[in-house]
Amino acid sequence: MASASIARSETGDPLLLTPGPLTTSKSVKEVMVHDWGSRDAAFIAINKAVLEGLPKIIHGEAEFVTVPMQGSGTFAVEAMLTTFVPRSGKVLVLVNGAYGLRAKKILDVAGRANIVHETAEDTPPDLVEIERLLSADPAITHVFAVHCETTSGIRNPVEAVAALTARLGRRLLIDAMSAFGALELDAREVAFDAVAASSNKCIQGVPGLGFVLARKTALAETKGNATTLVLDLHDQHQAISTTGQYRFTPPIHVIVAFHEALKEFWAEGGVAGRGERYADNARILIDGMRALGFETLLPEARQAPIIVTFHMPKDPAFAFQRFYDALKDRGYVIYPGKLTVADSFRIGCIGDLYAKDMKAFVGVVAEVLKDMGVGLKSAA
Image (cartoon, rainbow, N blue to C red; front, side):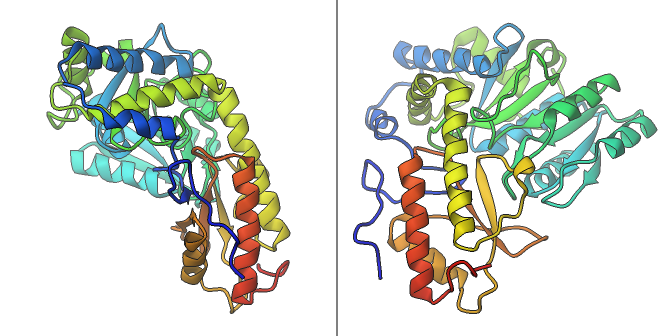
């Protein structure tokens, strides 16, 4: 039997249990009903506040600068890789999911030399192997790592990778797309040249703005590296720091919404507060789904509180598309799997979601399983 009520956000939309785009607050949506001129002083002031505030999230106000990049998070990652890695450089790409593989593809297209250390989607990189590769190949100038790999939800050991990379005299570039704002990354303790993220993840803004937090001294060395005009972070930074304006049309409404989202982020307690809520969401989700018979892909020690991967039930009555559609009909949108190691699906814990939402979701999953004829507590 279907739920008596259908889950909805403050604005009447389904709840997105996805890794971003995600459910945003009503106030974030509402600020986008106005228009601003891209060269107007009011918008320039808003943009400046956004750019100056972001380095505080990594405790990097003194050493880092924000360079925004119009587009999705991948635009920022490509801008970071093709700006920071010189034409004579070589990258060790750490891969345990789709976003590490995407970084390799970016480097291949850009003509940047690279090698890959790949582990399974449920397995963190091997530090011993990283040290062996770096020690054996002095041509490697950079290491690329993903903080939280959205493919599985695994939290990769960027702190240990950073320490090893620094000890061996190489430079680290981090894709923190799914982690930024929820998992601690302290630039005072973790050595890296740049970290890429976007507006529509844990800060809970809307899609359309990527950004790179760049170490000032490292960014100053990147002039002439970029392979494209649009994705040149050095040139973008020079223009904005000189004029306060983007080189090309900025996503104005996205930036204003991001400004509002950052206010809400700090009001919640920054990384500590938001990370705690997400961790609570993840705990409720995992405990509830396990009680119904589902199995998680990752052990607790490797699971980030961003998105959780579950094995598909073996019960022949279970059909994922029917499961997905039934949840959507009740107001919840989840994520299919994209693993090679397991037939799976994923459920996000981030966005404008709270404990009550996760508890209600687990209850709806139980109803859907019953409607499908999938046996409770034997689903997996």
